Length: 219
Image 1: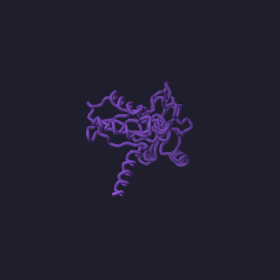
Image 2: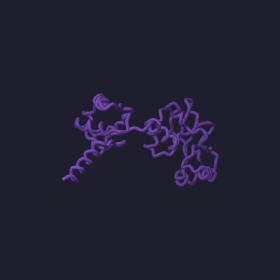
Image 3: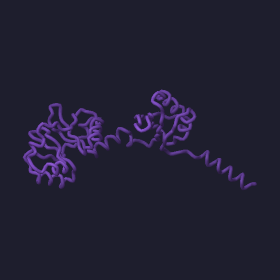
Image 4: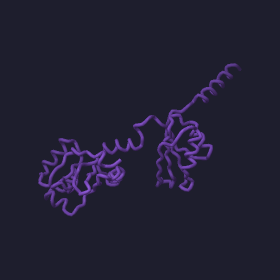
């Protein structure tokens, strides 16, 4: 999914000639925390209330002179916008054309919706299992094989290295809600399950408890 597919093209903008009062009015009336400054179709910067508060004197031209605004290209993947927002703590990221012309912005809301789609959150219900391991022990082929032995498939897999522990964290999204047998299989092969989510099948456990209760009552 590309940035141009989730960009907001009707997002408010201000110009270099707008007064601080006019910019503050735009921010307030649209209930937004940042607004792009555009001059002759070019992005000059992003204005926030904090920026206005810290620079009470001078014009916007001098404020943005020599600065390169954080932005993405329209054909960049949405993950680039996600990285910028996360690393720079931004509420919007401007989107530019191949000719560096301002087009619109990616907002937190549009990005969250895109990420939800990419993670398959809008699809049929599934189960997820998060495993912790050493990086050298990771094998996608083995994980896929173990999941498939339980008549399921891995529909999505995400990994990251946890800085605090040095562990390699793997999250599997599988094609079934009932994942109790998959969890059991992974544990039999010495995988450490950190947590899992899904519709668990407790029929065998309930039957065992029921039989135990009946045996107790018959004593």
